[in-house]
Image (cartoon, rainbow, N blue to C red):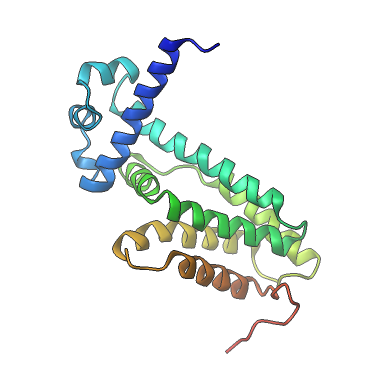
Length: 201
């Protein structure tokens, strides 16, 4: 049986993380002082400092919680996809965009933290994507291209979604995802599942 104190402490930490996300998304990172974060969470700065050593540690928790949730969300969908390079990379891209759509405030807050505090190491995201691209080239599913460059380009396209969506609140999310997946497939030269080649200009 869980300790009630432990559960309460975890809940308060989560409240502070959620308040940080809301505040940064709504008012920008410059507004996210520890005092304002605590007020947003309905608590005191002293309580915030009890749970987090400083604002930077709280920011790090915001980022880590996003990366952990995103990893679980995407992994489930990639594992469930058919065991072909084309299906795996489509699941990777589609699930990434859908996660952004469903967690936009958290994604935007994390982007702003990264911009303020420094660049996050991306190789953990690039390496599996690069491997999927190479696998597709090796079995003839994809065209020949520089897999490392294209992997970085795909990551940039995904990251750009978080910049685009807040300014286009009326955008149909499914259309946004479908068009993104279509762009991906044209970029790598993948044929649709039906086997009919994509139309090219």
